[in-house]
Amino acid sequence: MNDLIGSVAGVLTTVAFVPQLLKIHASKSGRDVSGRTFLIFSIGVVLWLVYGVRIRSAPVIFANLVTLVLSVVILALKFRYSRRERRVEPSADAG
Image (cartoon, rainbow, N blue to C red; front, side):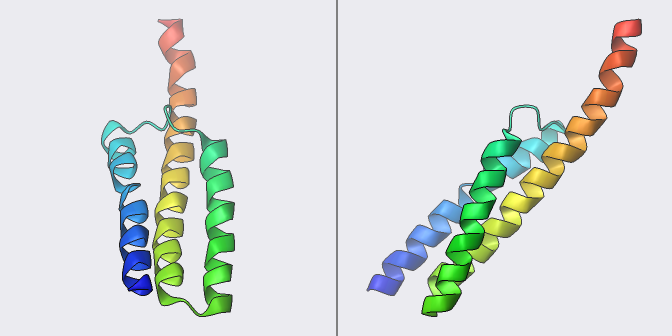
């Protein structure tokens, strides 16, 4: 029962990042996302992943591995689109 609760919690907290990822991808903008927040969060997820490995808990390992991938993709898209937005803004002001 504990593993079931852990698995459901892991799925829900992991899936919670999918809408953010889809929004960034669709809008091609990471302006509304705090890079610092996701960086700090990603470090926390890495620590949870290490903890899961140390206690050999499959639900903790799996949930945090997937969450880490989503978080890193969100960070990558945020910085990719942020750089693109910075390059476009000066030329827009020149017109």
